[in-house]
Length: 53
Image (tube, rainbow, N blue to C red):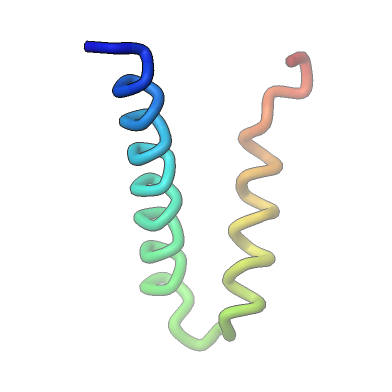
């Protein structure tokens, strides 16, 4: 697989993972607004960030 194709697949997988995560948050918190879902998303992504990186 060419480096270009691998990079394209990486971006596709990242977008798919993000969309899946947001979908799960919307199912878990149906009463929350889109802005609140985005805030929860960002807070949870921040928790996953490796502080040593």
